[in-house]
Structures are given as C-alpha cells and as structure tokens.
Length: 372
Image 1 (cartoon, rainbow, N blue to C red):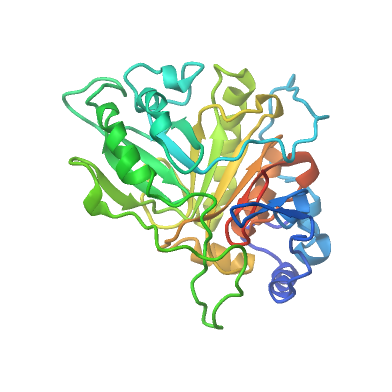
Image 2 (spheres, rainbow, N blue to C red):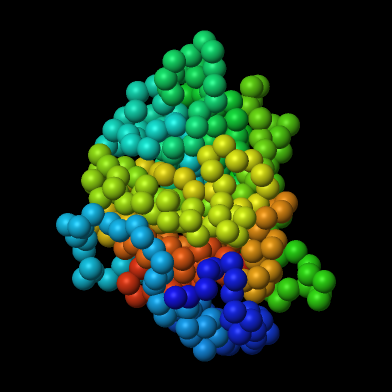
C-alpha cells in the first residue's frame, strides 16, 4: 500500500525539486499554440495548456489510482467514455458564485424566483469584458432575523468573484445593476495577464502578453450596504451537484467531497463551508456547467505563485495567501479513486494526471494560454 499523501518519500520530493530547476522536464508545449488577437495563445492540445505528470519526474504515484479509497460511485454508474473532451468548452471571462445554502436548484438557476441569479440573468447584457459564468452554490447565506428562505428582492447574500478571489457581501437582487457596474465590469478577467511577484531569486521570467495597468477593485466605489473582502482560500474545487439537470451530478458530488476531505485533512488544507482560516482548499457545490454526460465535472482554481515543489505547496497552503487565480483546470470523468492524485498533482502543482481522458480545458494567465 502506498504511503499517505502527507508522508511523501524523499525520492518524490527530490524529483519535484529536479523538476523545479528543469523547465523542459514536465512543462507545457507552447509550440502547439495559436496566437489570439488579445495577445493570449490558444492551446491546440492538452500539453500546450497544462503540464502532464510524468513518472520519471513525479514518481510512480502518478501512474496509480488511490488504493485506500473506500468510496465508490453507484454500481450502475454510466457516462460517456468515448467523446474527446479537450477543446470543446466555451471561453469565459469571469465566474460569479452566488451563495444560496442549497446544493440543488431549478433546472435553470436564472429561474430561481427572487434570487440574485434571476437578477443577473435579467441584467446580463450590462456585463462588459466577455462572458460571465454564473453559478449557484451551496455556500451558506447570511443569517437575517427578519427574513425567511435564501431569496428575496431585499435579502442580502454573498457572492464570490473569480478570478479575483473576492467576496462581496450584502448583495441583493435589487443591487445587481450596481454590482455589475461597480465590481464586475472593472474587475480583471481570465484574459488579463498575470505577473508574478518577484521571488528571492530575482524576478520571474516574463511570459504571456504584457501586464496591463492595475485593475484592482476599489472598495470605496461599492454601493451602500456592500462590502468587499479577500477570499481566504488558496485553492478552490468546484463540483457540479445539480441533480435536476442530471442525477449523476447529484450523486457524485457528495461522494467526491468526502474523498477530497479525506485526502486534504492530513495536510491541514481542508476547509469546510464555515472555515475562514487563511489558506487551504475550499470545496463548493455549484450548478450545471455543461457536459453532465461526462460526470463528474470539477473545476480547480489556483492562485498565482512561483513554481515550487509539492512540499512547499503544502506548507505555504496553510497560511496567509493573496493574489488572483492564475489557473482554472476544468476536469471531467472524475471518480473517487482519482481524488488523491487530483490533490497531490492538480491542486498543489497545477499538473494533469489523465489529460486525454479528463481534461476539458481552462486557462493559465501566467503563460497567457487558454483552451478556447
């Protein structure tokens, strides 16, 4: 049986350190790209977007599914295993996660009466800078003694805006137009180049298109009653749980969360829905994102940072963090036995273990590469 994820063998750490100083060992193939008008590159294949794991670098762990996983998908579980996944998702510029306290919704979340999602649907034409992905989530709604239920035109809730990793509190359906103008439209997008901070070894090598002027959000411009704060988590894992769109999503999401929790707890990285400790991994259920026939869908958002080995990622993932999302790695066909390596390699290192079978797409703002 393999050693637990939190007690990596020294050889694996040495391989990771070797990878750190050997750019071509497990890097992406930027020759398989196509120039875009905005200065970014479109990755024509999986290896041009994210690095894949390699046994000679990452250890033989990357070749094997979890052997100690006791959680299984339903016996009659069946999904599409034949379609080619990569390169078929539509591009998006920002992602808005709306707290509802629920894990399932009506078929189209914009039809949830009295909700922020409904208001966003009505004012979607006011959004600038590209497509806004809208997701309802199981993030708890704030407690209000004079209100019942999660929705209402004056019922405040909380939203999370990506890639800026910002919580906005006090959002009501009536204030959605102000939210769009004051927060969403000025915010950076997935196509805003990201420059890394200078490391102790000197500035990082430039990559991707040039860095634009600062587009950080100004809390002083917020409408009355709204507040802006940093999301404390270093990583986010989003799992589609909407059973009204496909029963498989409603079945798989709770099982995957249990196994992810089992893998993250020994590392000190698990954060539940009420855990505001800095760092760690937030796991949220979200509404339909497309491709339910490839269940389970998983989106991994990772903050920008210099390249480091997995041991450093674990240590630094527990403390104060900052910065925007550098990557979103969108996977599908995820099973409980995949979760150990998803944590070990995808969440902590930004690598993909089974790109041909599981990678749908995503973006990397540090390299200036997208899948669309």
